[in-house]
Amino acid sequence: MGAGILPTTIHQGKLYFLFGKEGKYEDSAPGFSDFGGGTDFSETYLETAIREAGEEFTGFLGNDSDVRKLLCKHGTYNIDYKTDGHKTYRMHIFPFPYDEWLPYYYNNNQRFLQKRLPPKVFKTTKIFEKAEIRWICVDDLKGMRSQFRSYFQNIVDMMLSQRETIKQFIEHSGKNKKFGKATLCKRSRRGKGGKTRRH
Image (cartoon, rainbow, N blue to C red; front, side, top):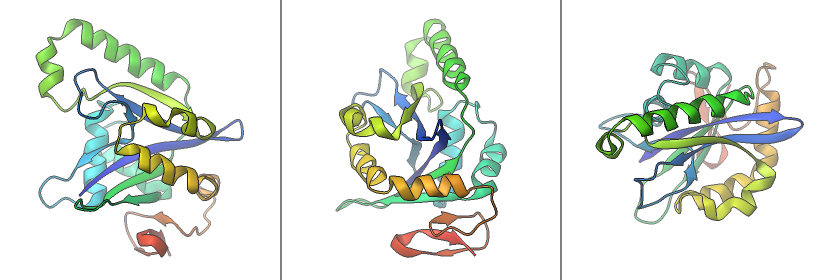
């Protein structure tokens, strides 16, 4: 069981996702993915996603409370991925304002730290897992599929098959309208396909 988050926006009429790329010391499954990981102890999906987001964004989205507010403000669109022999991984897609400078600041900060901290720090700590973040247009996902982490490539396929529904969710966010595949932190119920939605 695991969970993660994926900031998503509409920019110039196109759907964009903010992905993170694993650092050079991750050799088991290198490449891009969302910001997430495995569940600790008795965490819920949401609690796991919030903790992992704080660690992998190294505070660029704020603390756990700030991340929770981002996810709860408009709800999230959930994609549940399960393979034989593994528990479900839930990715929380949520609306996030487009900021072309966020990757610039994050990536510069990572390069600075990588030059000045010993390699052991990056190999043993959880807060430097993403060496780079990048806005990627939905139109580019298919061509970039091989650049994503091996397990995440199947999630990319699911995102592509649901691209129109995801776009509708992002477009409707903040308009106080009901939407079928959103989940709020409170007062949510199950929708189709294992999703939860507001009521």
